[in-house]
Every structure is written in structure tokens, then in C-alpha cells.
Length: 112
Image (cartoon, rainbow, N blue to C red):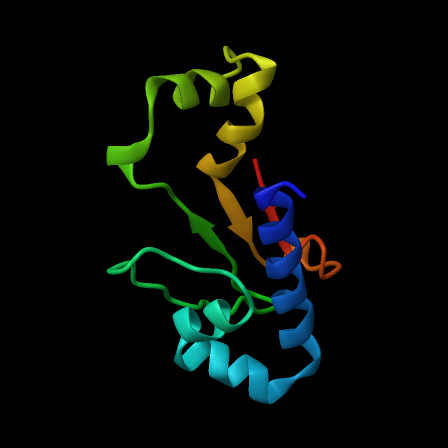
């Protein structure tokens, strides 16, 4: 199975579980790296993770680190990319908020 598919499934599983397991949710908020690692999702050493909880009246826009955004991704995000870059450009902007709350698979977020 593709590694990205496995990660997406693991992430969807985590998001689904936080919706029904308040202890798991609290653990994820308190120590996201350890909880995600226990679910098969690793991050490089030194990467700090923060959990933000959207509400009915508050959402978040997640912006990428400018130092890692390539010209190819910017071109694809602006509509000038090819099919091979279009999926990658999807990580340029993610919105998580009240209007997108949905299934565990969508994780309550929209990335475009």
C-alpha cells in the first residue's frame, strides 16, 4: 500500500477516535507527537506539534513554511501546474473550522 494512503488512513483513524474518546483526545492535546507515533504517524526529531481545537464559531487557516514552498508548488496552486503537481499543491492551504465539520475521513478540514 502507498505510504501516503497509510498515513491518511492513520490520521483519519485518529480524528475519528478523538470524536468519541475524550481520554484519547486529552492525550492528543497534551502530547500530540507521542500519541500520533503510537498510531503509526512519525514526525522528524525537533518538529513541534500543536493541536488546535476548532469550535462552532472558530476555525483555523494553516499556512505552509515559506522556506519550503517551491516555485513548482506555487505555480500549481495558481493554476499553472500539471496533474503531477496539483495534488502536492493541495497542502498549501488547509482550513479547519465549523463549516467543514464532517466525517472522520474528511477530518473536518478542507485543504485546497
